Image (tube, helix red, strand yellow):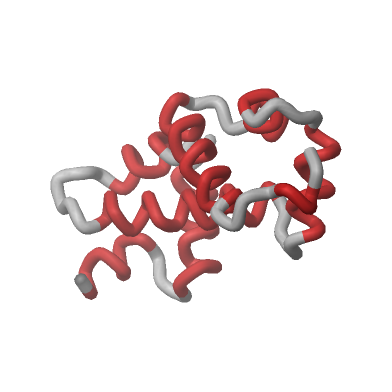
Length: 111
């Protein structure tokens, strides 16, 4: 992967890929690297060059999806946690509170 020839929207494309893999249940960086035709380490270097990390992109995608799902009151918070590939609802709640300062339930009530 040549850092000088990366398209400007490379990060957005990676987020889309992460989103599709997340919904499919496979969110490993190796899978994403394989999908873009590079090694895991090259992808990590590329992201670091842009001041990012894979875990940061994954968190951004999870946050965007969480906000979308929370707008639908028919989707249970536990189901959202499962869809976002969290092993426990508490892990999702903790991450969401870190992102927003609110629990998912509090956030939903403010919508």
